[in-house]
Length: 215
Image 1 (cartoon, rainbow, N blue to C red):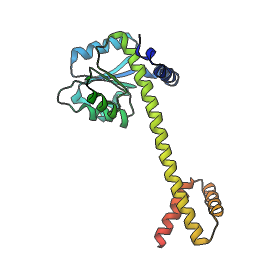
Image 2: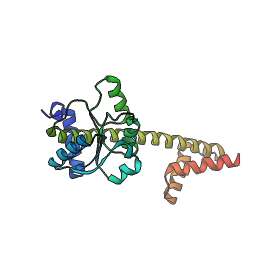
Image 3: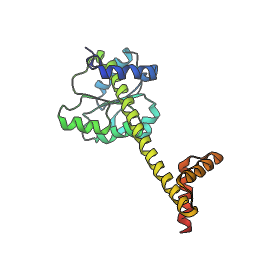
Image 4: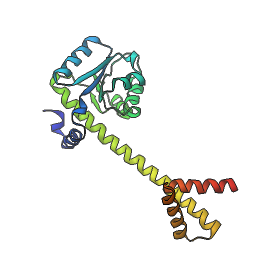
């Protein structure tokens, strides 16, 4: 049974991913130091109608080489000796915002937890058959999109909180310096933002900065 069929939540994510990305999931970058294994993986992916846009050894991996490949999903070998693979995986997943599939992974709990913290979207420790690849890649992409959505929502919530604090501080300045009521201070800031085509937070920052300069 494909791994996503055994998990209804992943099946829903997979459906969402397919609807949003469609054929865009086809571009795959392989990172593996073992040529024969990389060649098998490349051939298997191409048989499954994926477009393998590059095959790199770990010593060739950096931000520039990954960006140049323009891949949608990155598949990496986790057993590269002497390499800090987790740091590179974190770069791929978080900084470059690419789903990362780890094959040949360690089975111990510590390795799994470290990989998840690095941003791995699919962590596969069992032997992979050609027929498994499509499901693994699609689930990884679906998980990545879901995690990215959650990260974006958290970032937006933090940004809104910071902006509210700035607006509240600026309102306090206007109330203290000009005797406005809170609704009056807010209205003046809102009108100024509308007339200048600025966000409220930008007007608040200007008020706070002006107050600091005059102190």
